[in-house]
Length: 348
Length: 180
Image 1 (cartoon, each protein chain N blue to C red):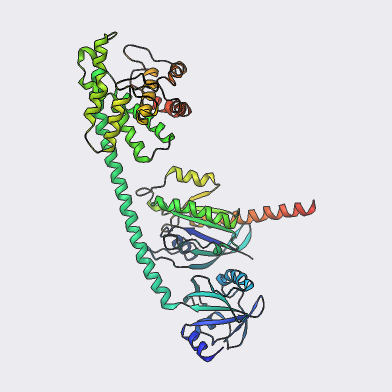
Image 2: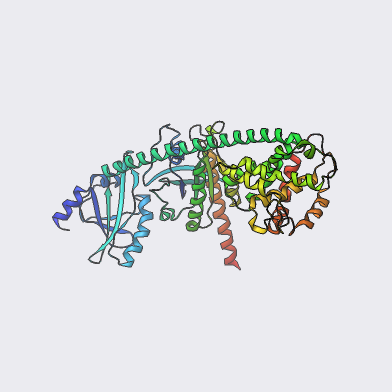
């Protein structure tokens, strides 16, 4: 090796070896101080040395280096930095590089010194920043969750107050939202939309607040005229919830408007059919019918789940979206769990 | 005495170096110092009446600037995937790194250490789905705290035991194949 090159490597605190065979190397440069600390004797230029076992990290890298030397490519392959400890416990940051020049397999091992510690400082700064950002994001997520819980709580209180007029219970209101959320999850909706439907679906009948007591609370069958007036609750509800750009209320408005639309187009208020009916409303229609059937009301006894499903099966393709009904049936176990966990006190 | 190479993998700042420091030197420092590259420590222990030297490779944590260099896993007998129980993101990184490591190492024993368990009363944010994803993949999960020492010895002992048992099973399988 030329004196110039040797001096360059010396200034880099690097040792250059040429590979003699699988285990033996020959030192081409002056031995750096750090290298002597790892060897049990003082080394001299030209000395043959067995590197195996000297640095555990290098044992692993040498296998990669062998591949490079065998391939005879001219590009260099770096090991990446590693920290080794001298017998005195001194920490030394090293990096190895394998390359091929003039048909010789060369290995350069360098003490990275300050360069390594500068990189540590740079990465430390970056990672401290990333940690702070992660913490901030977690805090925002937590706050958003709390806001969402409060929003839901307020919505549920207001809804149960509104529903009280026609004897719907707070549990019914909550169940509708939870069933709808199960459906949305099964359909692959994102987390935000799932949370929205949990609150929006229970608002489907909010328009009943605008229906006079003589109709809303009338025992027995409504006249044709009264029924026409009752049908207004969809539009009233949609109107009450519209006019904002809050996704939750936009969804609640479309559900209120379309929850009496039917898959075959015979529903009200506009006679939409098939997938022209928003999916949120098609979901709400199914879970609302299920909940009404399996619970006792002042005017009827609760159906068993079996007979409720028989009734609902008749409605598939006419009232219900067939694909969504399939999803509902697939998730029946979860629906049943909600039904049992949120049962009306004193009702079956 | 047998020598076994094990690696510690995981996102940055989950406490990999702290776990090694606790296990090898019985010390813990509160301040976070990032690892660049690889640090190798040695620890001797006895497992199944056998003396073993563990070569513990503490690999730099993964982030946007540092990816797992799978060649570091060459010759590994087992690995510990470390996650921080107060940072759910680190558990996702752990799951992904495990998949990546698996492709390189094949079916070697591994343990998932969910670290910083001393904070589990106040800041624990491990989600059941994340635990399930790991358990479905056959992971043994140990809650650890480099600060208090909880689960640290157990993690390395159990991994070593699994390594020796896996080796013995493989040897038996090999012997059986040769006798047939």
